[in-house]
Length: 371
Ligand code: SF4
Image (tube, rainbow, N blue to C red; front, side, top):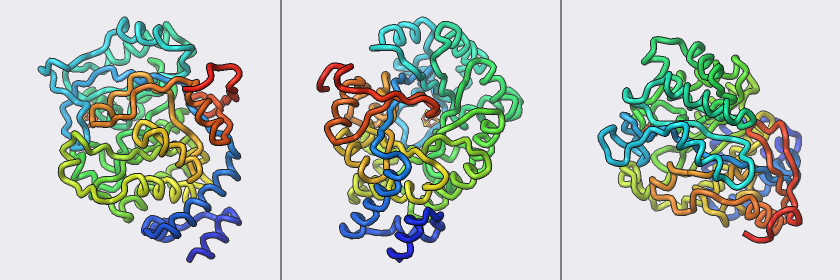
């Protein structure tokens, strides 16, 4: 099988789902090294030594949520002393305090009757009016579904209202694993696989670009991952609207799901394997594979850049979701550290915008040396 796959990679031919699954089932160190080398080769062909990141801030406009996803510790009930709904002044104060000009906010929140869709749009509108250059990477398919249902709107009309309020692209979150067998176990209140795809496709049809994520490292099998990646590749072939694929390693420490799953596997090795297999499977369809330093830690994230990844996500002011689930890799990393670390390993750091339409090379001389 290796020589067959290798020849497909060399000839830039698409891998089949069966071949993807076979790659996901590799276990031995030598086979994994083989997989990483092929993923690195495919990435270098597409992106050279350029590694991108975005200067961004999370704006989780509320943490109030009535859903019970088993992997989430971010949500709070409306009567919790920790519950909040951000005001414009809260957001403004954060944006104004950021180091240098941000290019993106990631605007997402919990799902609750106590949080009104129209107020959420008004807040976004106010932010966009005060900071017109700030790209609003906003709303997951789950939020679109929730607000559509609450307000008797179609997905198309809901997304159109979000765009009118300032949404520039759609978050590809809430995908978790796009296989209903897994969704029923870990996030049974969320949209089905078909609904997630429908919403993302509708967003693309309305001119938005989106990311696509997977939350892995819990109950899923290679079959589930294969199904997920197949769904993503299929929608991408129809719309070309997906800018990057973001594998998100499940953070088990404080979560209910973490207490339910066996954590004996080497999670970082599994993450490298999934990332490398995704790079090869998406080779002709999705150019950018992101590694999350928040989930993986800096050293592992840098290693992932030799295993198929080419994007380091964002500087990420106000990262809340991972930290509240027990993540310990911090909530913000200054640009200077990206530049220093990427240069140190022989990569070329480029700051990008959200949808990869602009990229600017950054050098050590223009920035403070060292992290
Ligand atoms: S993952 Fe999102 S929808 Fe699920 S409980 Fe957390 S905040 Fe709510």
